[in-house]
Image 1 (cartoon, rainbow, N blue to C red):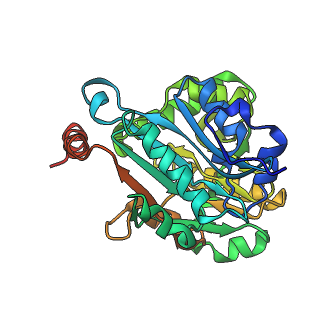
Image 2: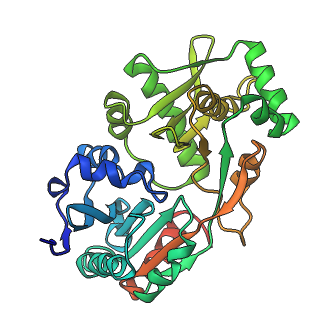
Length: 334
């Protein structure tokens, strides 16, 4: 007997075996794993999931979070974010993908002003399906770095970055994994300062990072110099396939010949190479039509520039435009 197609909106309706089988497909990524979903729930973030099942197999899965700014702009910045992009099984049909996307829109359009799917894999073969239900494709760049061979990684890196790593190591910088809560807090203090001064976008609170460390949701690599944490990086890992640069920071310019942000990025690259993880994913390099200093920084590590873009669905256009203006104003932009 052939079972009917069912859309699950409750994570408990999906077995671990079903989820693991789906993760073998080429659109799979860390942020669509149960581990990531459970983490977001554990830190009190509102989550959602849509999974289409047929004949006891999950054919399409999409999960994400509801975000909003604090304070005055909270009501104007409610958005649904899908990190990584949905997972499609190899035999998912067009109508199955459309059914899930339509269900997402119908369910979330009153909860979120807009939905954004931040692709970390190539979804070009599916773009027309997103467009069919009202999503717009937004160009967005990223870097993917092959970690198979450490000597080749170093060769592809710019000579200036290689020198900065050597200088930092020579000066006594060490790459460590945090052993104490104090070290995690020291890393967070540096990250928080970076976001306030330069990034100027909301940063999750300290509990987000403490929980991630305690639950081993992601790897933490910290840079230690003279018994002080001066930088670090948080890296989720997806099987032996990808390590992701999620949050990176450093007290750059504080100490002569010391480059903690570069060391932190190198720490993750080196770990990937030593542990047979195929790719380092830089998690974004900005819009192609806009200058972006971080893109220049990331380009020096020798990765391949890719454009997998984002899909955007605006559910409430009026509030969306007001929200964009309000956020720009609060950031001090004209």
